[in-house]
Length: 244
Image: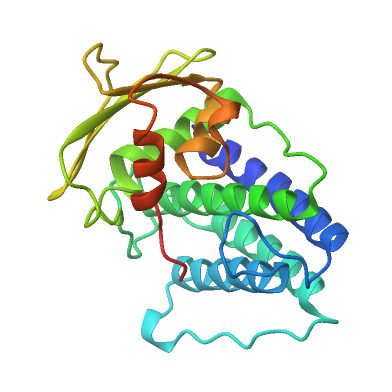
């Protein structure tokens, strides 16, 4: 996906996140984030947006600080932070040279992609808290999110200490061409861009539903499972990415 597509998606999901969070209320629980209330969810994303803006602006990460807004200011601060991040990314030079933590065509592309998916997944969290239904993702964006999770963001952060024996999970979207096989073992995770017939578990569905399922934001009834369906519980146990 191109830079502008990621920025457009970031803007859409930031608006949807705020709408759902306001509907749910700050005290509402977030089913997909144990022990979180909506207040903490909005605070978290607001902080991450400001942190990413700080880096894109070329500032020292060690000097970053964030003052948590009060409840009466939180939603406005969140929206202002999202808008500021989009402005910084849109204004940044194509030759921007700032830290990243995944391979990308450029640091600007990296931060636009990472923050669009950060916001997207947490938008789902807010909609689950609001309990009025989850908005579908466009297929190409969801596939991009799966690729980022499997090939970049996830493997270094997955906790596989509870995995007792190696197994493979193949993710096969029904509405886009890419497929992925993720091999999970006690010593780590490896992923390839292929559909394998010998995987212990295959997960079928729209790219949007697979994206949510892979991030533990959808249930087994939202996708189709073939093979050892008990491995879906194992997936949920290690596919947990800690909050910043």
